[in-house]
Image (cartoon, rainbow, N blue to C red):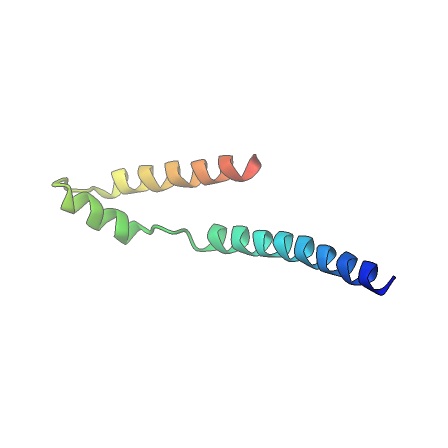
Length: 73
């Protein structure tokens, strides 16, 4: 009986920990995107393009739309 309760507690803890970690990571990535405007700007400059603010805004909005679309799945 004691072993059964221990195994049940272990399974519940693992499942609960997984979903808690998943929720935490999703909210962290939503608040702090992995790529910023400055990173995008330096990446474009390294590829030989001169980034305008309009182009940066378009790319950032596309990335935000993609991340929102991925979160809905």
